[in-house]
Image (cartoon, rainbow, N blue to C red; front, side, top):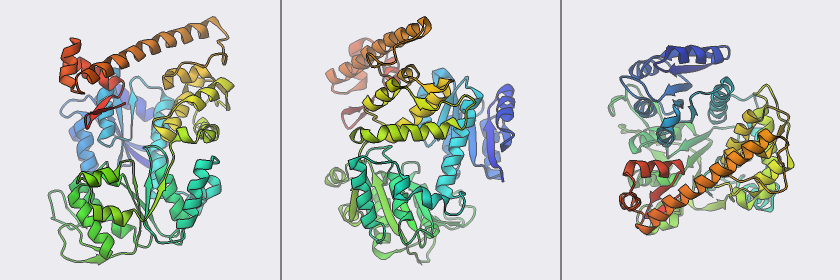
Length: 466
């Protein structure tokens, strides 16, 4: 059975082009504005929405927000103009799967949609019998570094038990991969593994997703809905980024952990289930407990068997194997299949700090595969993607055109370096107050914020994140 996609764009030529690209592999419906798209989502089940941001009647951001409230299981790919990248970043925070800047190549659309469906298969099933289980055997997870071998030893210890596990680590380190490894190496492996992303759902939606709801319990509850606790009965429930749930939801989760029973939203009946709980966080939960933002009794209930997942910069020995794995994975989807990295390209990968960890490496390799157009991914293909200067003495330009390109990139990176430090310096001088920093530099606040967005500089708790 083909996957079902809804294309939403007010430009007929864009719709026809996307239909030609995707029509052979998927069932396609189209909508020419946001209101029409919401109507179709209410009528049919779609796997993926390809959604333009700028449309009449209702913009793509509002459509995204409403779709995620009504159908959080649908993956949404945003289509943006080059001047709308800041809006696209906002869309990602609201739960969009990915975004594509116009104009895009057919291969980019195909690969982004394929990744969305790959993710759906991983989350909701669809692989052949035993395929997913074998994928999460220790020998099939990339990690020969001492840091990852230590993680595998802890996983081997806790997997056969029913103990509650907490996975800690930065975003993109692969916490869900480890959670699945625990499940598929446990006695519950023949029962469901149910992941929940606590960052993508509001408080009311998260409670409804976890506990289920009965018809009429709130506006939009047009039928009874089974919750994820019930879906995971006999298996494993994985709560990703548990540090983002509200104190109210924390209290209800604590009651469930203590009693192993719950009530659906709007229901008076008590239901009992048998599940194993795995949680994950990239936050300082101890600090949140001290600040009253996270319940101490819940913290002690979920912190039974903690496992720290190391960031990629602390397991650099794994980078070549991971990069080559992603290379083979993405090369299947392009005409010109690169088969290896040059020494300079690998050197660049090994020397990057990877603030986005394995997820960032995966994205970089995917883009490099598209750009390469030949047998080898070279340093020059990576420097523009990664924002790094080429390493001296490696991958020396072979032609005047390559020299010109590297010089252009070097100038661009120098300007970007100055701009970023200009913004950070102004913020630091003004106590991380954006308005005062903009006034101090003589810039309009909107232009100053645009520079902050360009370099992904965010202010949280009086300190910058970048």
